[in-house]
Amino acid sequence: MRSTRTLTYFTAGLMILSAGAAHALAQSRDRIGLLEITGTPADAPSPLAWLFGEDEPTLSALVQAIENAQGEHNLDHLVLRLKDAALSWAHVDELGQAIQTVDIPVTVFAEQMGPTDLMLASYADKAMLQTAGDVSLPGLYMEEMFMADTLDWVGLNAQMIQVGAYKGANEQMTRSEPSEAWDQNISGLLDSLYGHMVGTLAQGDGMSANKVEKAMETLWMANAEDAVDAGLVDAAVDLPNLSSAVAGEGANPRWITINAGVDASKFDTANPFAMLQMLTAEPDDELTSPTIAVLHLTGSIMTGDSASGGMFGGQTIGSRTVRNELKKLGENDMVQGVVLRIDSPGGSATASEIIWQGVQELRESKPVWVSVGNMAASGGYYIAVGGEKIYANPSSILGSIGVVGGKISMAELYDTLKINVVGRARGPRADMFASAKPWNKQQIEIVRGKMTEVYDQFTGRVTDGRPGIDLSKTAEGRLFLGKDAVGLKMADEVGTLDDAVEDLAEHVGLATYDVRHFPGPKSLTEILEESLGGFMGANAPVSGDAAALPMVRAVRAAVGEQTWTQMVHALNAFSLLREEPVVLTAPSIVTFR
Image (cartoon, rainbow, N blue to C red; front, side, top):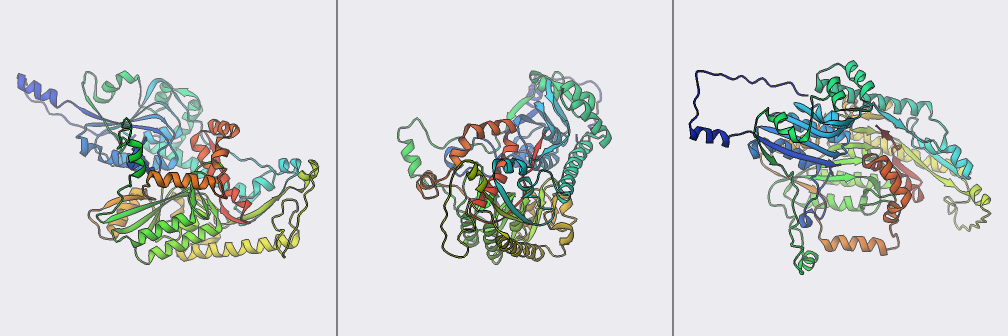
């Protein structure tokens, strides 16, 4: 928790309250702001938020609500209530920094707490947990599945080639255990993540790292009282007694609910003409004052249009959509600067280069900076180095400068199933992706040569965008946390999205300005056209169907939303191998509590 503020009270003589003074005292009772955080905060607003309102606040809205709570609501205390929150480490970094800007006491309260909840609470003045509530702090556990033996048993031959000794992206399909290089890479990343978690808890709660690790022996499965004894929680409090726990015994505070940008629908759905109004309404997204634009790039990177669901659900970053957005931002005179907010494990090498080119074109007319959320790895980092300046959260994952490509031959599986596949090819390379034929040595060398070209282009973009970087320490697939990436010249500042926006505004000389998030709002008609167009088109999405399969739903429920999001990004990126032989993607990393 933050260092305790010392308040000094001076008392002189006997104070007699008149009826008027007593009334004034009642009117000046403590004001406690209540901000609830539920689920996983979205990084960007919904494209239909202008029409239907926003069900849950975005991360930026929560940060602004915390920073502005005291001034806007004249508060004496601020309480953040975590209601089934599923926060990522990047969320903790951004929300924690916002808490530190507040000049009134801040309390974090929850019915149960896991590692990220405890980390966020460590930034506050007080951490309170529901009496008998659950707490879990076992440490970090990471699992990888190596499926080479399974694929061989089924009759599938994964011919996956990578450039970059530490890349590791092909190993889950081609090996039964990690290589020495990948083991060193991923173990180093896990060490950094663990050190960051322990360091955050130790600094915030005023204890040594050894004491935090000792607490884990008890708190791997414990209750609120155990957490209090361990020093990671200040008090076990029953929810009805939260007022007295925050404001003091006998206090009668006034609670003020903070909505954090959550708006109701602008249409009266009881009106029979409301749907017609919705269909014809257009968002008013015109910029009328100097603006810093935040362009969100979330998900795996693919050619074509961005989508809210890839093969396995989740978001995708479409090169065509991003280029169109970059062009619009460049042509809008009200946009004084752009921050790319990147959260991506990579994807298509072609799409990454197309987006990088668009960033360079935009930089000719206005500054483009970068803020990294959870991850800017492989193709995500490829895009990031196109910006003039990179900000990363302490726990952001950066790097994975490497290339992977290949295909899976199904010849043996066909034989087992007694399926006779007859292929017909015209042209010297027409059968490169024949499902029933593995690559021969010549074809493997052709693919490897293409991958080497992409790798050389990738490292060239990095050295051009990051002067002074030492590729012998940072390339070949290595992964780093944001707090370490700055020292390696992979990033410029450890900071949040807010930091990047504020510094960019100062850089371009703006004292007052608006912040707008892109891609911008869309009309209901646009959304329906995109959905129906994708369904009826030649590339009809299997995303919705795949995401709805019972097995997929079961896995999603089992691993939780936060881990599922990480898995989906990686699965969507690897699904590109159906169409492209070379991709820029980080290996999938699944972390369990």
